[in-house]
Every structure is written in structure tokens, then in C-alpha cells.
Image (tube, rainbow, N blue to C red; front, side):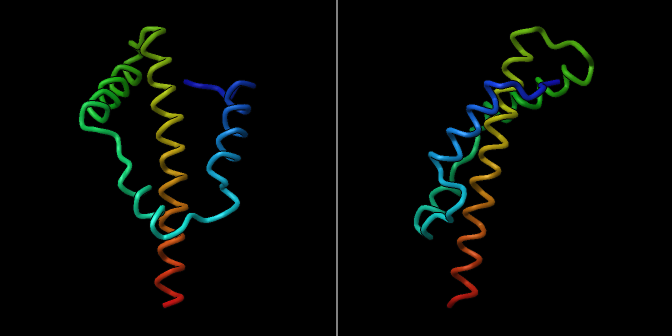
Length: 94
């Protein structure tokens, strides 16, 4: 299982500045963000890696790959959350 490292903390700090998590995106940007999804190939690969991890059979390279998917999935989840908040505020303001 992945543990947070100094590199992860630095990555997170940079991404936070890049995507400006303290501000909500515009509605146009929010709709575009919600279209960002992992392709089918990657979703299948994540399921495969997850099954191998549960069985305790991940190689070192597969563990790195699974960690990368986890980090990117978390980032995508944050972006989607911000986008939904923007669109919800737009609906309630209308």
C-alpha cells in the first residue's frame, strides 16, 4: 500500500497551486472537467491491479503503477468535486 512521501507532498502542493483549489472553476471549465475520465483500458487495468493487490501478488512495478492510478484518481476526484460545486452554485444562483 502507498504511504505519503515528501515527493507526494511536493506534488500535491504544486498541483494545488496549478488548479487553484481555493477557487471554483468557471461553469464552462467545470463542465469540461467533468468530461475527464479514465479510458476503458485504464479502468480495466486498475481492476486488474486491484485484484492482484488484494491477492498480495503485485510486482514492484505494478505497485508503482497502482500508486500512480491512485494518485491520479484522487486528483480527478478533487477536480470533479470542485466542478460539481461550481455547477451547483450556478443552479442555486439562477
